[in-house]
Length: 274
Image 1 (cartoon, one colour):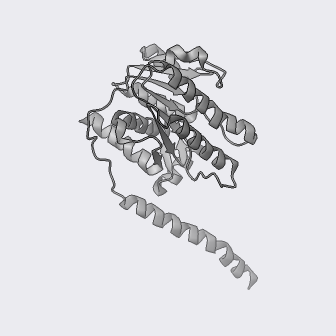
Image 2 (tube, rainbow, N blue to C red):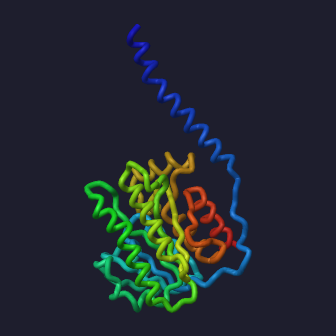
Image 3 (cartoon, rainbow, N blue to C red):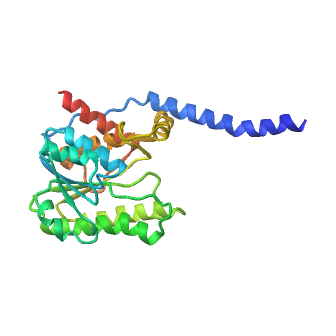
């Protein structure tokens, strides 16, 4: 009698998870929400800067930006070059600045002075990183950048697009969730009352670009995709470009979850077809 009972006990959570997964997948499949066309002409975002282009999300953002005809110049501020960055340099669209001190941006003032939008993808995992270091990377680095950018920017309006994370909270027991919430709060405080709009992207799992992803990453992406909990890095880039173009349709402090990121990515693709 014990073996069947044990088997039942083991099967119950599996069955419950399968039912939950199936119901979430069905709800996502039935979700036909779309983004309406922009009500005004697209704003100028001819010159942008990407921070973190050597990482998973940044690589996808750069790929999207290279394919966007309205973007003429991409300033890539990075510690190291990648094949994608080198490809962009060869195309004539990317200008690379190797930079190591992300608490001091005086060396890149000239590059960021005429930038219309900044796509920020610098980040690190929590593995082997203490809270102070994690906070410095995710809070201090972008906050210091925004302060210096505002002090040198010559554009009448600018936007800062920050990759945050889903399920963040200042009261969370998870260090990363508290620090991401603190980053959003501090960046919004800096931009309040200025010409800067700060937009936050809160994806769940970020799948690398197709050419960068290995089998395990693809499996994770396709496992979470049916329940609307994964997004390709390129989709984040497309969503950022679409949000940049829509301008004041987004007020400072606006947030985009995984679902919204995907919908604005699709809106971007549709706009390219029109």
